[in-house]
Length: 236
Image (cartoon, rainbow, N blue to C red):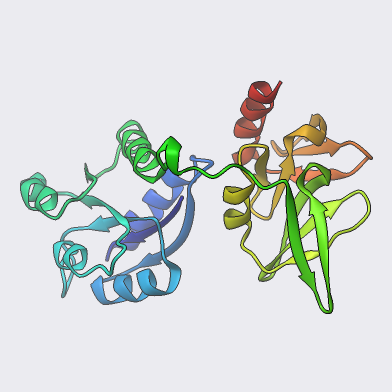
């Protein structure tokens, strides 16, 4: 879930960013200081959700919400004043958080965003059986069952199998959405195929190494370790 924070107060933006870092499936893609900057970043970054302050110099958060392009991201208003609540929900805001934001209340808002973002079962496509990866004058046909792990490289994803590692011009998040629940992110720039994980080895700093069949070791950050362990349990 890609989110954008919009608030004219740097301490408020920083605190909310720290709280959002606790959610493994949330990626903070940017921060904006006012309404004009927010709309520019929405156009450039296409976030799934905005955490939007109501009172800002110039255009208010209510003005920003009313000016979002279609398809509009979900809006969670964040403000110190509860008397804006009715106006906020008149703009079809998904939720409304009071400052200082409490972690438990933020967790409920994140869950509402997840429920909004998740497609209905009838809309979900089955994961592909293979990937077709163009490479100059040829096309790699790579069975998904052979993929060990995925690694970001600038604007590409390196698709690692035991025999080859072609580049796809995709985002990691987009490719993971297509590949389905058999792949889990372990790091900002890496994801693994659950079927090929042999061991998760803890390191002293809270991070881990994911050991795959064949001996490959993939980094796993502290932020993503719990989700990986949970998915491994479900896969088992």
